[in-house]
Image (cartoon, rainbow, N blue to C red):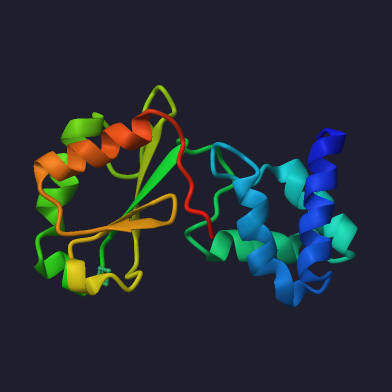
Length: 163
Ligand code: FES
């Protein structure tokens, strides 16, 4: 782990606070430091040491929340809602479209590391179900054309939501 990563982690921890009650917002930002949307083991170990808490407490949070990963994902992580309202609004068809366009299945990452496809519980976009989230940005009411347009935009480079 290089010095610039250590500095970035320290900055995030100082911004939020050293207590373990701040682990969630800290981990969200730390994961954003990595273009492949994951938290490498050496980074979580360093975080725990710097915060003076046990490594297992950091791993517990990482493994509990689906938005965190310990393994590299695509530059763009597509979360497909798999909760009730999206299911009854035919998220199956949307999943089929995504799998066709990207050439990968749910739970997989494309070979060029551009996209990962993952399930997600409801993220509050039920009014536009079936909904997806790409790097935190929500999209709904999708047809094939609109979906291809959105994916093209993300193909051109990783785009992050600014929040
Ligand atoms: S059920 Fe899918 S966003 Fe709420």
